[in-house]
Length: 239
Image 1: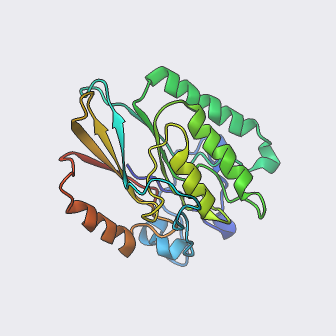
Image 2 (image 1 turned 135 degrees about the horizontal axis):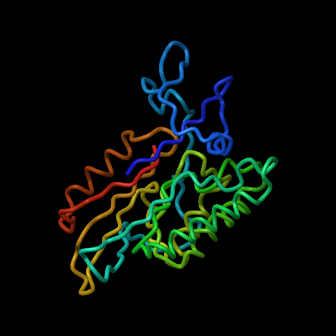
């Protein structure tokens, strides 16, 4: 599962909510300096930022894997929510759009009863200076209030002035499967049956603003040598 959120500046800039409300289904190519967006890599489109790389500001588990029990191995359900962008375009929509988003996700959870929810990046949106803690707390409450096990990937808009407190809070939050605090936001989630037997493994990568680069590749190589790896894997990342 892969989610992309390209913020194109200049005359091509189009805000997410305007994009959605206009009913546009997709943009195939946008010319930038003679190149299409498909030809540009994440490193061309965005400056590097240390998103989710700091270690937790408190003592939390150093385990790089979490476990989620599944009652029926034949019917595993994962609800993916990406690019939620809480607190985006507040000057235009106030908090009404965010409230609708919360209601929509809760309705999907109630309807499908997933085993877990995958929040795959850009849960919140570029906090203004001095507001990052407040906006993170609001985003965290969204994930927690679904009362369902959840994993989290960092997205390129999930900015914080200090990532240490966020790393700790993400790890300790109720129903959280996040275990990336000591590995640069990279971690594993293992789905087990009722007896604790491994079924599937979810690989969660932190692609910051740059996509998969050497740190992610090195971590993946290390994980590939572990003896407790599941035969069946699925990877979640944002870029």
